[in-house]
Image 1 (cartoon, rainbow, N blue to C red):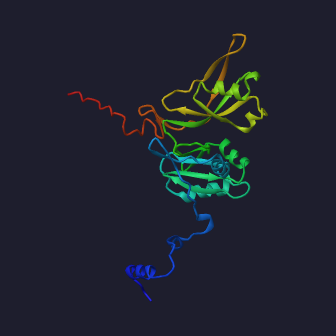
Image 2 (cartoon, rainbow, N blue to C red):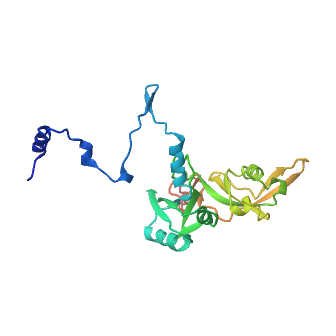
Length: 258
């Protein structure tokens, strides 16, 4: 028997039992949510989850990386093929869209994740992939194209500075140091330190950094950038070069009358 909404309402209201409307929207256990009352601070609602809620989420995404294409991706299946054939060495890798040309890739373990991070840059159809480790507290997953994480090799670092703090001081001359690769962190390779540094497009990378030692002498730390994303000097942004810039003024040569 078909009932209209009006008839359905009459049937429910005429029933001796009170109907719980939530029963009409039942879901599986992993889809259900709970109500936690917010706080009212200075007339505004404030949600303040306890520490264990954050820890649960951080644990879930601990082996994930953020991937963004520089330029529009034309074929997502090619990216999937790269992940399934090159990035997978053990276990399952999940790819989850997180925005325009933006993805979260979750690895089964820390080793698999770090191998992908440390062997970048990666390219698909001549388009670079910018990758970085997922970290808690990210306000936005999108990369700020005015500054990007870039792997840098720093050589001739004195052994007494080949520490977490020492390398942080040296790398800070180039930008915001994010993390070291495994071989640098474990000091298994002392020839150079491989450091991921957030570098601004508006700044040039020097070939060397002067570092003052405790005795006052100056030592030069040599800088090598194996791969630098394309950047535009006019826009001071990564993602396109001077030749393809659409905002750069076009110089028109004046014709000289014959």
